[in-house]
Length: 76
Image 1 (cartoon, rainbow, N blue to C red):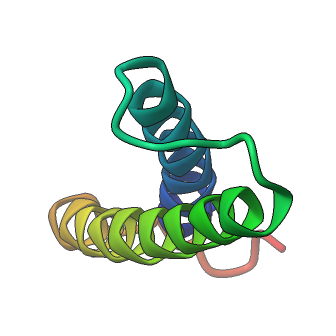
Image 2: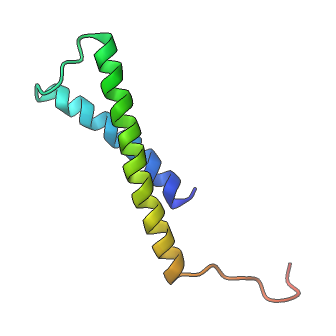
């Protein structure tokens, strides 16, 4: 898995956790189905995009400092 994929997965989990914590602290009401689904979808999308971008940037920075090794000529 790439750094971007890890970032997206972490963002999805973070989005779900933020909605559930918001409900536990009394900021959000998840008692109605439509708004609850909307909260979850918005949080998942925003978390995936933000954390995916962060993961992509970190992955590129890592590859810049640690270039992949190419095999020696004749060793395939």
